[in-house]
Each structure stands twice: as structure tokens, then as C-alpha cells.
Length: 60
Ligand SMILES: [Zn+2]
Image 1: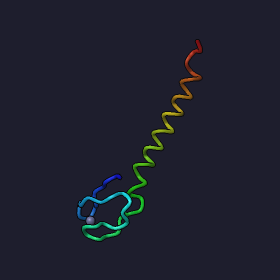
Image 2: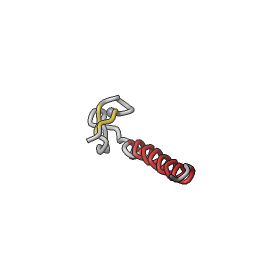
Image 3: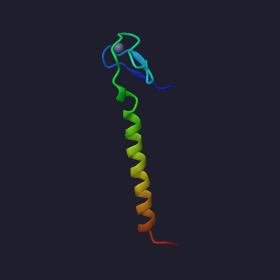
């Protein structure tokens, strides 16, 4: 399980939590999704780069 920090009180919260267990403020729903989205952009970029290299490099 992934652990994050509350932006309000800086307490430790789980990525699946909807509210901070320390100060009780509702956590933004994109808190857990944001790093995953960044990872997807990286993954797609690497795949596109590999495909370009496959066509660009001379075949042996
Ligand atoms: Zn908090």
C-alpha cells in the first residue's frame, strides 16, 4: 500500500484514504492518480522511442 503526506497537516495518509486521519480534511481525488499518470506518459514515451529506433536503425 502506498503512503502519502497530507498537504494540510503533513501527516502520513494512505493513497486509498478519502479523508486525512489526522486533521480530517478531504483529500483531493487526484492525489493517488497523479503519479500513475506521470508513469503512463513515461511508459508511452519509451515505447514510441523504441518503435522509432526499430525502424531507424539499419536491419542486420
Ligand atoms: Zn491532514
